[in-house]
Length: 87
Image 1: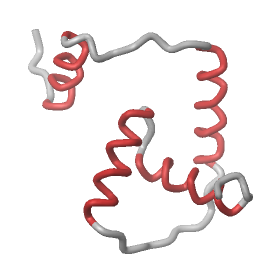
Image 2: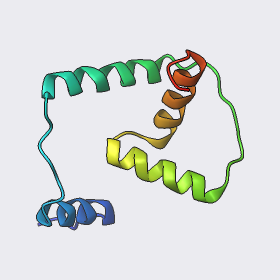
Image 3: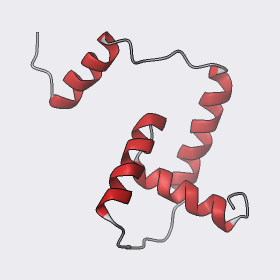
Image 4: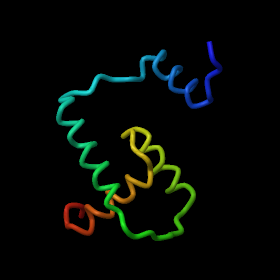
């Protein structure tokens, strides 16, 4: 058996601990993530910001829970705020 990376070991341990949950409304969730992926592709501007290390860690944890890159989560939050869907 090939050696596993640290990430693969963490995933396997998480699965074996029973931390994974079935997704309700799978088709809806697939559609949601497809829209997120499409929005990610359309990015045409790059910015650099400074934020507190703790805030970044929290965002990275939330993104991991959602199964998306943390940059995508930040972009989504900014988009929702800019479009008035996040108060």
